Length: 410
Image (cartoon, rainbow, N blue to C red; front, side):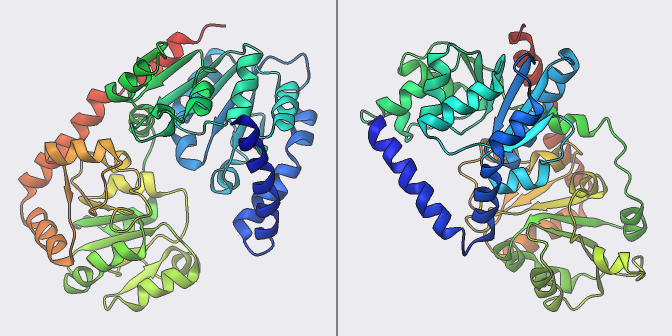
């Protein structure tokens, strides 16, 4: 099985290089991986004490960041190698101050695995949530390196738990300990005789709780809101837009902030063309246009959304109206606001829990959106009740970072 897997990786390498000629995202990954070994070589000396953190993409980075920050404070003399598989993680966080060097993870061949580990020579390895690369992890196991997996979530349908999944299953045993988000994941691991497992919870709760400790003031949002009722639409996609754009046009007495996931001008222009109320974008504001008398503000830039949520009276979080995947509902939840999402949330345990607790509402149609948002608009006590449910949920579930940090002793 390992031979077939390795052959498949080599074939995939050739195919990806060909496809990269026509796809910018793939091209970034291909070119980035060419530089990986030289970047490590120029940043890490054989005598350095080193942490290696690996994240699939940006979401996993945000999930691991509170752990990375805690370890940086606890072990300031250790150098940090941070690797990503996806360009969407690497390109956004390639200059993060949490690491001494940020690289693309090489494709999972035996040769790359040995070369990567020889150069990094990690004293400790932290993988976040997913990303089980067999050749790399089997080499980690062979070298008996200290490696843990944090914020892990497992499902019975995964091949680790199938009769044909022994090769992938063996990779999990490279980790000296696995910290899961829930009891079900722990049970699944126990069923395959992996016993070094603890339920720590989700580090994202610690991450969003830290947001309350910083200054969330955004001057231009304060000016735009002007003490009026405000709805924030976070990380939205076209399928989400269909649910709420008509409502925006029908309610000029509310301030609306739309933070689309895709901030390309062609998409934000498409949103503007469907709006009949006065609308301004961040780009237009930066060119000198007045922001205060607009009904809608389109946040066509990155880096503000987590703070913008602090100005919301109600929030819609995108991704679940279609199949792109629900975005982070914990970011607005920490500010104690009611949240609305689309219908496809089954793979997101925090959404399922908060829907049961009635802090989050799932809707399928524009009519349902109008009904829910209208109730929240006219009933401040309902907004307060649902918001408190969400804030209490965050407070109850934080603490994963402490559990993980206490385990790591060097």
